Length: 468
Image (cartoon, rainbow, N blue to C red; front, side, top):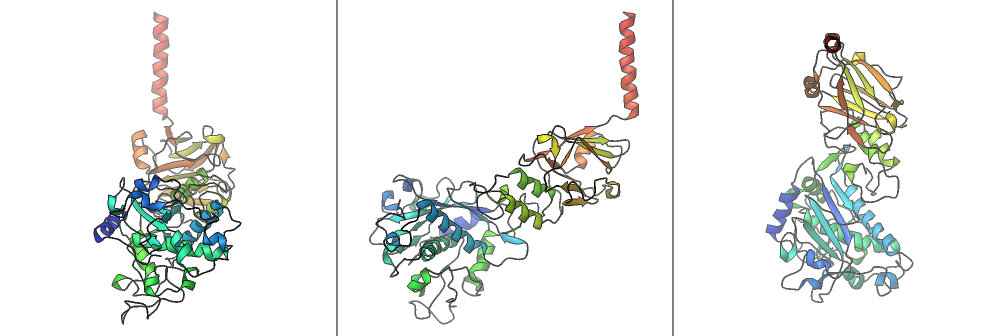
């Protein structure tokens, strides 16, 4: 938390334009919580004019013997990676613990590495070598160098916490709280949050200013009266109205800046259906991986896609509420009989020779759900979503089905291939566990009249050869 945080108004507006304030987000924001590694890296990020880039921000090993954290005992026996992951986990928890409507969460991902792409923020954690500047954290979009490659940047100076607080860091959690509070505070500034007051006696406090002291708001700073003990607590984004502009709380303003997303909706089509389950299953890495984000299926934001993530999507299942076309190559076959409207799925060419999840949708709302044929309880007794605009099923045991499965006369009859393709807004499946979601191939069974014409043609060719 900074004694002051510098965010020029023009720069702040640039942040809000890139990230796009909204009630429900479709794109999300990715924040890279990155610990600087080398002396040359600051040149690629930001500086404070007119200081040269090498002044800010420099690598600093939190578990080095010279730090107060180690000297006091908090990080004495800890590995650097352990400390970093603990800090990142705590920052995540501060953002994800804010109250949201049932079934929704803040639309933001945190990665333990650099982030890239639109709407990304990289927070660099290290130290600076500027003795005249008495602050812990610093927020600026691109610093004095402008936006770097269209990315948003922020930085946190950890060494100032280590040297300025009158606290003995003998407890691991206290030390993590101190760094994570600063980090979350500076990220909050990038989303337009301002300082809030922790003490009426603090310089600058005026009647009418709301004080948030128990628990302390993440956006509290030393200049707003936060005592040393407040730095080592697990501070949160509070819901006290009036702490932010227009009478908002820090939590509500954060939601308006970042947006919300439906828990489990990996493809952002505003429902949690078999397509989402297939996406998560197809992205499965198992526990202990890194680098995965929400759209990959990382529901608990620990960097991997494992059974916990699959369970969370399953628990949020809504069924298809809106059509969504998945554009990916397919192998398994959907076999349509235009004479009857019968639909079969051939799993023999799917990954592993099985289909564990599929979803068919139409905007026409003219499926015949009463004709759907399946084994009891669907594929494996887990999900069956059958209606006039969606026919879908998922098997969370991942046994699936092999060979050809006949689903009955569920489509309208008399469609040619072009009409079938236009009729289906979604036609996707997932093969064996971890294989990924694919768009299914569409095939037609020729009608009897067509078969007769083909037969006559073959006979004519044979007769012709005999004549010659």
